[in-house]
Length: 81
Length: 259
Image (cartoon, rainbow over all chains, first blue to last red):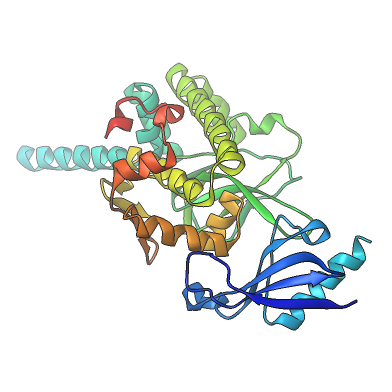
């Protein structure tokens, strides 16, 4: 399964600058936001700002890096298939 | 000698009054219903020997048989349920003066868990003691009214998670806690100790700690509150209430709500 990332800026209202759109087969499946220093123990982690379709969840997780985030997204797409 | 005895009597009376004034259960229930002296004494007695319980301790778990009632005399506890994936939803806070269900022992098993969020002083009230208390009409009325307020509060929390934005949810919760804690002498005009984490606030308001962080920042930037070292300072109470559309009627605090 291949995911495509595209850098983007998301208006979260704080210093989070580095974000990524995540596409699968041309469809937008998630938006990941890197948490700024304001988040203390979670600073630098990637947050699932929103997931679409099978990636949607009521309890959005945080990930230590983009690799872990993509692994989780792939698992969701596969598991629900 | 008689002067000494008199002095002692006065001291004892002062201590007793101080004890009553500081007892959050008494303050809460007297806010609902005037209590005769004998009822006050009975309520003080059940609060006499609380246990100190550390933060994050389950007082009773879902599925266990309710054996009496927990009374919180200090600290914050909560009612919660867990999903299989570990996600937690907090359905109620038990703050000083709050107790579990008076009629809980009628049920075979708990349908939710109760745990401490901070270090707490907790008194466990045995079923027999509850039954005896309920024979006192004023106490029974106050406890029943308290149960009605718990139900009204749950409805308000349902509205919170279902129909308010993330910052509005927190603002509403802070307005509510301010009044509830003031009613038992644990808050002043400008704020209160909030001995819980952002994760607890997230699980209370149905959002992630990331959104709690952003919401707190928004409330701060609007000049409404400041949360530092687990102390919530209310910078603009009318503004906070207006932002949250907070109407205190559901707490049924009467004149205390105007404070």
